[in-house]
Length: 171
Image (cartoon, rainbow, N blue to C red; front, side, top):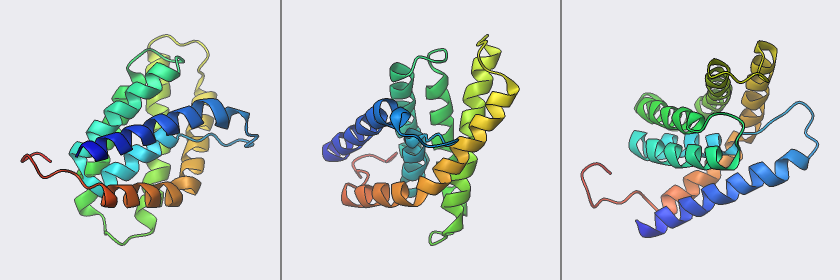
């Protein structure tokens, strides 16, 4: 269990550093990734609602601390909700489905970005307009769909190698 926490923590920190320091300088025309959201999606798809909520909370907190573009707690709320919703929906998805993770990657990318932007807009952020919100949501959804197979396979391999502990009833 300790090894799993360390591996997932290292994965989240590495992903956050790549997302905030490397990806803004790569010329990806009209595409914006949200790798932390993809990791939350992959954990929730593989391990369920409770691990999805836990990783979503940590990933959102990390995003809030590293990117101060919106009020603190916005990303934490969105990522935690997405981890819980996807983890709850997991039993209703076909385990060998190829399309379900791709559809979820687009949906969570677009809706997560839209929810984050709407909260910022409601809390008085002046730089966000409806056009920016819609275009950013679609761009994140598309890029997350492209990256989803790689990220989900990597996280699935890590989750299989370091499974959720069986020490308590809630895990």
